[in-house]
Length: 211
Figure 1 (cartoon, rainbow, N blue to C red):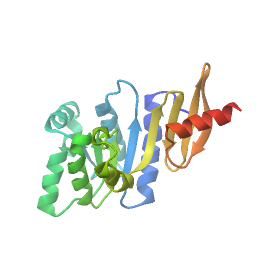
Figure 2 (cartoon, one colour):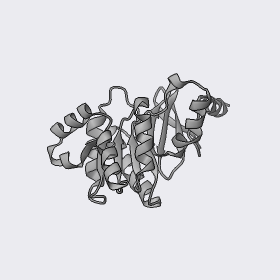
Figure 3 (tube, rainbow, N blue to C red):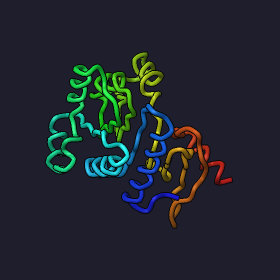
Figure 4 (tube, rainbow, N blue to C red):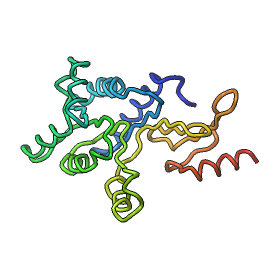
């Protein structure tokens, strides 16, 4: 069943992330809330606060100094846990790496190299919230393929709630991806997928359900 609102989705995401983190000592995980107009900062701060009791060393990173400063202004009680992506990279260089839980808030393709470097030197788990590291402008050449096969393929979905043209996709670790069809009276579950389905797989599932 799809969550009724954002707060319920956040509760589901928290449980999924906790389960994912408990499953292995080091992992690269994604959390996605693809709601139109969503401000990711409050969501990321609430997730950090919810995870801190179990992971007191947890830190939340932002791609640039401006976003970091805004976060520290809005969350004074969490300011010590908030860093810029470059800040942690510098700490890693000084300390020979980093440990503990790290959350990444909305990195973009422009941050790809830094995120890849960060992950290579981090010995704990990382959770990327609403990140978009893959650059469509790179195209389908060798560079793009190598990135997909390599670093980007290492990330696993802990939680995803994604609208589609016909409905929605939802994944809460360790369950499979669920595909929902949007009907006039609400959403109905169509089927599940072990891996995140592409557009073609979704259309095939809808055709099968309509038979």
